Length: 453
Image 1 (tube, rainbow, N blue to C red):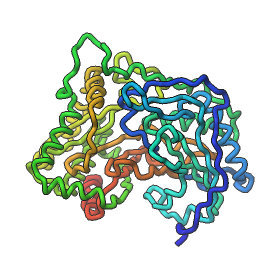
Image 2 (image 1 turned 135 degrees about the horizontal axis):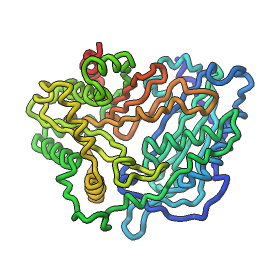
Image 3 (image 1 turned 30 degrees about the vertical axis):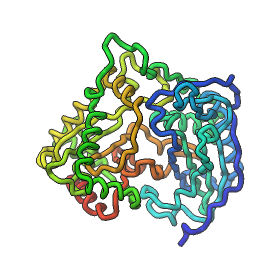
Image 4 (image 1 turned 60 degrees about the horizontal axis):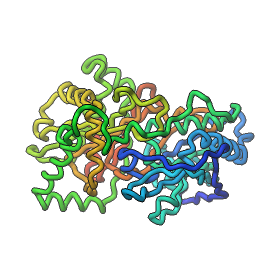
């Protein structure tokens, strides 16, 4: 088959900031330290999207513009040219801004984009479209940004990018990539838009051990996401056979699938049923569908947890351009049997209440709870995790010449997380990517999509 053809890396460069900064150590927050691995994203650009005369868009031109654009961008995002390091006083990860550079690779393949089928559906071949640095267990040797531009046999391109989750969350990743694309524009001046200047200092989120407000230390029992998670773990621990069965799923292969919710369906729900709360419908539907598809016992506690951007939730809000991790998990719990009988409106109201519960005190309690040792969490079928990226139009990032035809996240550290993204082919539509066990695919598809028909 066509995807068996190789992807050949022809050159690899270490890219340094155009303007070097004095080395310094930047303290990371507990939010930054949760996942120091690289998160990968592949943007696809079809030949018709490349330019009016695709034969003039050579690999040399594309690579040189991406390289010079990255040099310019790293001058402002100098953290992305640094490395993680261990704080000698507490053994926790911090960020060493030392101008060590990012990695940019060039690759070619004879595969045509059309041979990959539906680009919104994950394909194992996509793993060849990102540069994966060797990791020896020492984070101080690991680049925080690694990218690869690949030219296809049809003249199309992909730009595969890995960024450390200790460096950026979703909105910060979008800001960085948008700035890089702007500096790499085939028609622009290659200079950074001064309105995009990032703010790297995490001081506002370094709460642990410091007096932050007049209130005493916040109890983690008031942080619903932490409390619900502990209760789920305790519930699983009471049924050893169930725990062993769930742990065995670590060895099974999750299948990544993308489900499309059309803009027409979203508008119909908004008009007929849910009003302005329609934006929470996809969270609600994935929670119900996953719980039913996995056959959770009716008496079991189930939980939906979803990331909430706290940039505007804090008082005062974080500065515009904050480039670190600024999210916490909000949480809704129920009993599986009750969830099945609840209306969409009732569940959506609970989601809205959970979002509104995110206050300064909640954020502080959440961050302090993360200061405790974090056990490895086995997959729990009672826990549905959601990450909403619909406010970040990754497909509009113009690395080559025009919008990307498709954007595909690769396998995340927790494959069963549901990611919601804007659809590049359907105005107001949503694409939901989730990892499921093969035997649950058909059931999940039925429960998730049938209410939309």
